[in-house]
Image 1 (cartoon, rainbow, N blue to C red):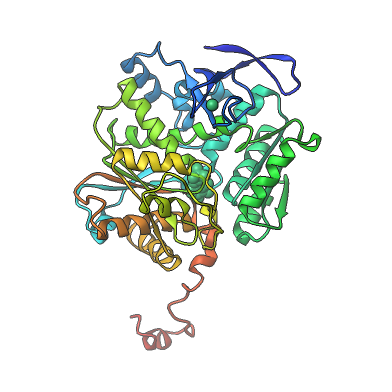
Image 2 (cartoon, helix red, strand yellow):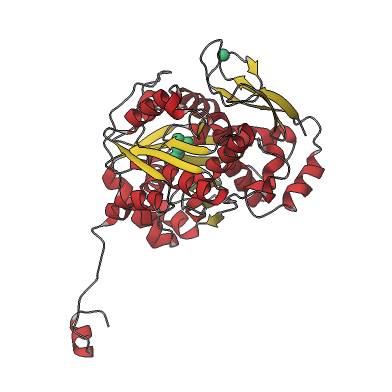
Length: 429
Ligand SMILES: *Cc1c(COP(=O)(O)O)cnc(C)c1O
Ligand SMILES: [Zn+2]
């Protein structure tokens, strides 16, 4: 596969092998640069993303190769910025999570066209973030970084800590200091450094940008900053898996949560690639974005018909989605409009309701982000925006054990003495 000579962090020429990844290309002006730990276009400051050379692929061969691959994201290695032997390297090997046919939830919401929950709480650190970190780790390896870092709303910190532990990297990650206890413990337990910043996620992110430009951050791979083009590609695997699990078919509608908006834009990129490669039949699909009302800069812009996303100060229990200044917001607006989808938000009460609906109908305990997507799905159906007669996939991107406080009101049905009379008195017989 393509082996390139690029400038490494020490500016000495270094050979990297990132499989089919051919270059970095600016999403705004198309300017191309060699693969390296850079994320902004030198011409226009637009975001860089991976450009591939897929020209040698034959659809039937590729499908067979994928189906014979491991039950994790590396079955899609031919479509990712990773070397061909990636499966042999120490990595958490996330992905290939369950696509649950959610018939009970479908009945509850009035969906007749087939409703599925893509349950990414089944990843090694219980959120979808393992997918993106796995890509960033391979890029970090290729570029010679030995410390992994990130700015995080919680889940990313845990995913980076765990991946670094497995791969033998140092990790030092940054989070808002007031996150849920479950998120803090699940990030700290892997033994890396976890730093709380006095401020919200946008403050954390700004701090990390400063650190990258400072000698103190030299040699550090920030998975969602200087390694962001590689990191972001991990979300494509959600699109690949959903289609493969549907029997190599596109769903009609997908509901995706939005934090920075990266995941949503790369799900669209993944679907487009499958169409171009001839792995799925080309037909229209709609992508819907989901936000919490207390941090809804993208849905606010969508509803106002605007192209620019005005930053907000987040205030919601859906902390994993609480990015007030989402980097990919404008691209999310483009995709929702191009595909005929939309962006909607629900309030915290609706988030909690949705967590409980999903749990009691399907036995899936989602974190608040999952409550946001299920809640938005319900609202979109009620408003006649989402078509209940079409095949619909809803993402659950994190595990409810991480955000127990959100459902703290749920508990014992009754407390009884250990005898049958007491049990009967409680009315449970
Ligand atoms: C990070 C995250 C997302 C989406 O993040 P993007 O920045 O939009 O890619 C969704 N759900 C959970 C649980 C997350 O942690
Ligand atoms: Zn550019």
